[in-house]
Image 1 (tube, one colour):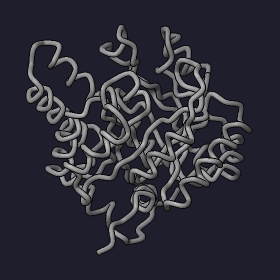
Image 2 (cartoon, one colour):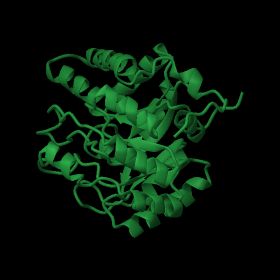
Image 3 (tube, rainbow, N blue to C red):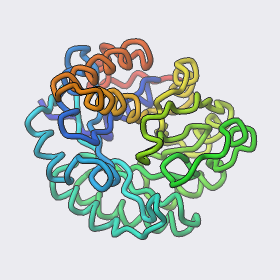
Image 4 (cartoon, rainbow, N blue to C red):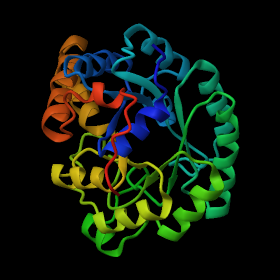
Length: 311
């Protein structure tokens, strides 16, 4: 039986009102318990690494993540995704994004993300189109971002309620329509009240603000784009918002802080790697069963049926 490609799996989720979670791996030993939990719950998820996770954490490199994935992968439950490769990073430095993504494609990553969200619209479109052209040769889908999903930048965030009320950084629907039409992006990460967890040494163990989602705005974005949408910063968002988001076009949900913090905390408290891995596994079970409600999702997402929901 042919292996279903990542784009088909995400589109299955989108059409059926389901979601594919993506789990970031900033430390290599976290990968095995994440995969084990997905397998034990018969769930499907993406194993992900972002550029900042080999720059500011210890995932090592694109190759190190790929090699670790080859040891633990479960084709019935996982695929390998390259998360945020920024054009301009959180420290306002220019990144050779095309070289990073080209390396990932050559290594066999099954989907990739370019993040030009800190650029003006036309430049974001141009950079994304460049990556889409690279990925096309490999048959690999491209995720892009429009709007400002805050949290990774240096310095404190403004009060969350001020951000939400002002809709600062929210993805604009008309810009999203143009972006998808001109960039070649397959999936679009949007800003609708979601925020990333802090990554600074001082902030990375702090609890994230309890973010909310503007579901009405999300519905406008779904209508404008007609493609699977992605929710970054999934940790800490109330389950009812997440479920509503899935019904209104979110097909991929990124989870990072929720599994990273238990791993780091266990080691900081004197636990060994095995104990830290157990903490990740236990947290994964809670996320799968109680927060995302995706236990048993793998057979549905890997099916080639065409069951659809109305959008």
